[in-house]
Image 1 (cartoon, rainbow, N blue to C red):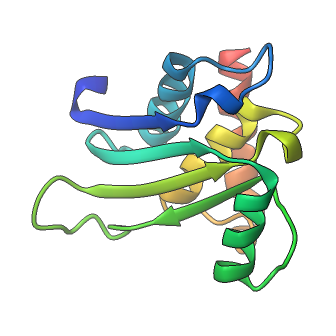
Image 2: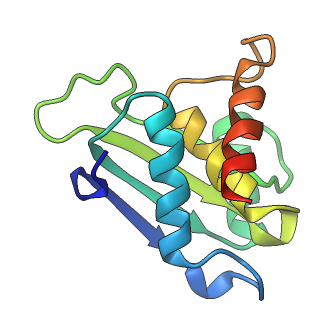
Length: 135
């Protein structure tokens, strides 16, 4: 799979702590997670934000008024679009995330349509396997 057919933006990288993944590593983790679902093209963004911003998003979209580790917002979830597929956005709060690499993979798997709340552990098993490959 060629990463050139995937456009992955990484925003807010300045919020990351020492030993955090680089923008290149974030992109590679996204490519790996997308490949696990057979997705080879499209656009997505990964943004690192502070606790206040993720709490606002969590409250607005999930009605949970507290910070969280990662949120995913899928766009063209069925794959049909007029132009390049818009996969969606992942928002990660480093101060509420114990493993940033895991959060990137987790969020990306959600953009592929996986949902650990209803899939009897399939998504979390895929996530664990992908993380074993990169560690």
